[in-house]
Image (cartoon, rainbow, N blue to C red; front, side, top):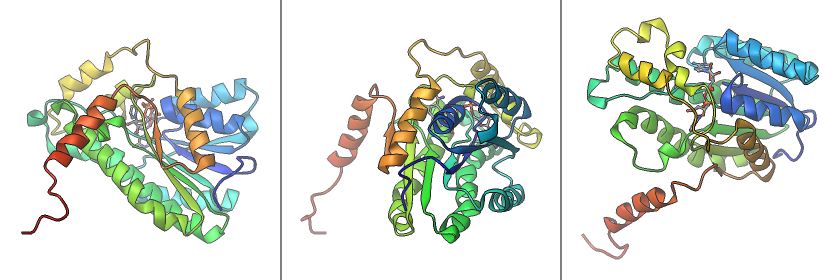
Length: 280
Ligand SMILES: NC(=O)c1ccc[n+]([C@@H]2O[C@H](COP(=O)([O-])OP(=O)(O)OC[C@H]3O[C@@H](n4cnc5c(N)ncnc54)[C@H](O)[C@@H]3O)[C@@H](O)[C@H]2O)c1
């Protein structure tokens, strides 16, 4: 059954302790869901739990520390969710890292970091939780966080980031029909600029992927980036995601600023597409 009401539902939100994930957590908690924040960073988890406690919502929010690239840990956590909640109802595969720098300077470490978290984390979430979501028979919903970077041609500094997000967009589109047969909805979130801590990428990069990186200087520059005044508040995105779950909408697109670039990409592809009746 698709989700029609958040009361009594358990939502597992990766990267749920900061930025967009925390915005989604706050909105789903306010709308009646039980929240499990799943995050790499103990400092983010502590700060997020303090906010929920300050809002008198401690009872409806729990947290687990997890690196979404670690499959054995993911299996453990999925088992814990089965034990404690009879399985989860809503999976938000949102954990991601900023990953940008001159592509010709990138090392394998930069590809492995960017694709490992931004694609591998989503794959691991699906592989770990989908069996229990199908088995408990209550239906549910999965949201994967991609980016508008997946929908347009991006500057070269974003080759790895955009490639990962394009994979997330594509797998979400293509899994939707199969999941619908199991009563599970699927949405893909494509945000533009949102206020968050995504500039802290260096702090989320494991030591073994610092070695061999060509992007130490780029990560330093990213760490100094300030939010733009017009960037969205994470709770606004949280509301869009909650509404999309209830309506089982595939695309959650937060910004209209990139419409021209989305159209330009599509038009360029169509311009090179032969008519269906062309014979070879
Ligand atoms: N903020 C934006 O403008 C924007 C735009 C488009 C897409 N996104 C995407 O939104 C998602 C959330 O990012 P955000 O902007 O809120 O950033 P954020 O850094 O504020 O939040 C991401 C959270 O994910 C956690 N995390 C990082 N690596 C992890 C790992 N390996 N395992 C578990 N948790 C991990 C971090 O500790 C952090 O709490 C990401 O997928 C990002 O790519 C963000």
